[in-house]
Length: 206
Image 1 (cartoon, rainbow, N blue to C red):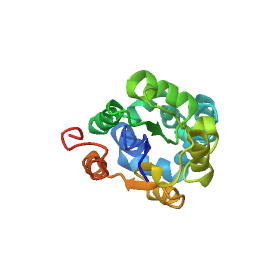
Image 2 (image 1 turned 90 degrees about the horizontal axis):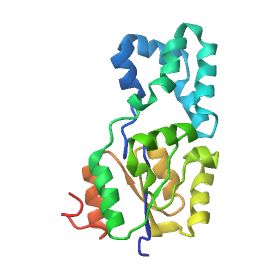
Image 3 (image 1 turned 45 degrees about the vertical axis):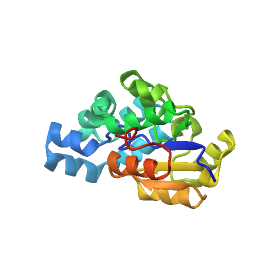
């Protein structure tokens, strides 16, 4: 079947998402390790990604761990520093596909408030042909429901879709539905895959 849409994850595909790296730079690796061992910060972020209020969820968690209050609040107050920089080659690939009238969808674990904020810094987040943002959908990858929702809304399924994501569990869930997939570990490999699928030429994918 012909590919009819290309589906991009965002974190670590179009924008670097490295909270640990951020905290290492601010409080040092030793203190960061101690905090992450005591506080389930990624679990807190999953709540945001499922649609819980951005600031309120993080500030509430901060009050549960007063010894780390200021550091946890940074997850909100300095969030854009964690979600940076853009992965420019991936952004070029997105735009190259759209230039050829190939629809590009997002499928991302992202909160409502955090996404709206990111879209003020990264214009390309406003340019998807269809947005599938977990905060609005109230379900996160790799739950099969989020993939089913994309299929139902877009009218596309199986190998008419090709999806890239940096997490193997998210890729496996898409493969289980018959999607074509690419496990993202850098834009060069993704560019080669798009060329091999006949979606872009080598020059277009550069």
